Amino acid sequence: MKLKQKIHSHFLQLATDKVQLLQKRLNDLKESGANETKSTAGDKHETALAMVQIEQANIRQQLEEALAQKAILEKINPQITTEKIINRSLVKTNKGYFYVSVALGKAIVDGVQIFAVSEFSPLGKKMLGLKVGEQIQLNEQVYIIELVQ
Image 1 (cartoon, helix red, strand yellow):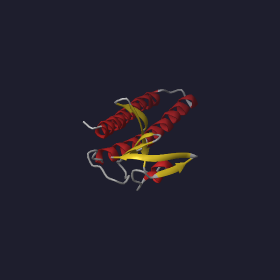
Image 2 (cartoon, helix red, strand yellow; image 1 turned 90 degrees about the vertical axis):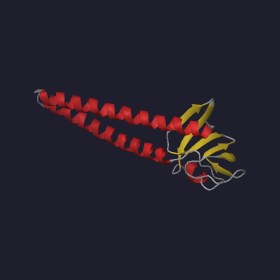
Image 3 (cartoon, rainbow, N blue to C red; image 1 turned 45 degrees about the vertical axis):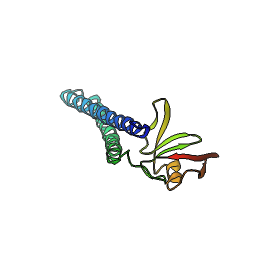
Image 4 (spheres, rainbow, N blue to C red; image 1 turned 180 degrees about the vertical axis):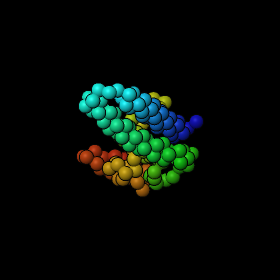
């Protein structure tokens, strides 16, 4: 399996794990909320129930974002390569590897540190359309494109 395919699989698994964790947390909060409705402690009960509902709303929003990230990754065919940087490109620069896909942070795959960045991030936006040998500057850092897959 090529490095790009391994990287893609790794980040897809991260996104899947994130979705599962958030779904579990949401289910746990639903149980907690159900238990709170059985209590009859008055104001204390209402405050606890409100806190659970706020947390549920926050988790639902995070879950929506995680599901969207996972959906984007599932649509990417890591075997496709291009000369220009597009969404789904693995880019090697003088500052390291970047997987232009979704913002999932840093990971190490086969001993190589990779940053998954969104095409909408400041760095992702500047990279789009570039080819090997071209460079960009962001926050006083110069990134020279060494490889595009």
